[in-house]
Image: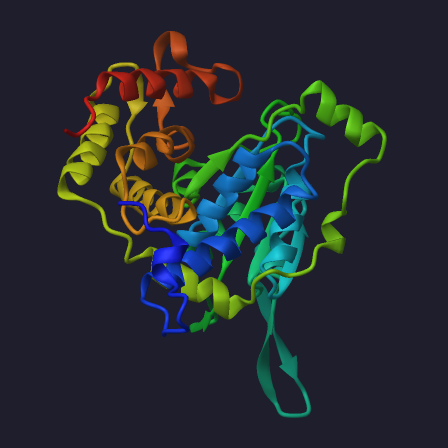
Length: 333
C-alpha cells in the first residue's frame, strides 16, 4: 500500500514515524541518481542498475562497445558516493602485486611491511579488465567474494563499503583474455549503456553536459552507503515471490539452449538485487516486477548458450534465451 508523505509527517510537529526514514532515503537516492545522470546523458536505466549493484553489496560489470560512456558512469558513481577511489588500467603486463600490494623489507626495523595496492579503496575501477592475463584477473576473486586479501600468510580486510566496477569491450578481442565463468559469477550485474539517441548525441557534440564526472559533489558518505545496504537487506520478499525466483533459476538449468545454467550464488544475487530495486522505488517489499526486470542483467553473463545461440555478438544469444524463459515462467498469483 502506498504511503503518502503527508500521512507520515504530521503537521503538528509530532515526531516522525518509522516509515519516514524510507521517504528520506528515497529522496537521497533520487538525488544520487540525478547527480550521476548529469554526467551520463540520456541513460537513466544504466544509472539505475548501477545503483542496484551498489545497494545490494554487489560488483558491476559494464560491457559495451568503446566510447559510449562506460568509464564516465564508473567515475560519476564513484564521485557521487564519496569515499576513496582507485582506477586500475588493466594491461597485458599487469601483475597481481600491482593490484593487491606487496611486502617490502624495512631495513631500519628489520621486518617486512605490507604496502597495500590500489584494491584497498571503497570504489575500484577495473578498466578494460579483460586485457590482462588470467593470473592477474584471478587476484580479484577473493577481494570480490570475501572483501579481503590474503598475502604472505596474513589476511587484510578491505575498506567498507567495497565495490568493483569493471569495464570491458566485448567486440575488441585483439589482445584480450575473456573472463572465466568463476570471475563472471562474482559480478552481481552486467549492464550495457548503448548508443545515445539523436537528441542526446547532439547535446554531447555541443558540449551541453551539466558536469563532468570530476565535478560531481558527493551525495553520500561511506557510512551512508553502509546504512542503506543494511536497510535494503530488510526489504520483504514474499514466499510466493521466492518460488517465482527459484522457478526462473531452475528454468535456466533445465533449458536445452543453455550449456550452463546459473549458480546458487546467482539466485542469491537476484534476490538481493530485487530488494535493492524495490528500495529504489521507495518500497519496503518486493513485487514480481522487481525480479522480472533484473533476470537478464543478473543472469546473462553467467549462462552459456549452445547450438545456434552460441557465439552471438555481445551475449545477445543468452539475453534472447533468458527473455523467452521469463515469458514462459508464470508470474506468482
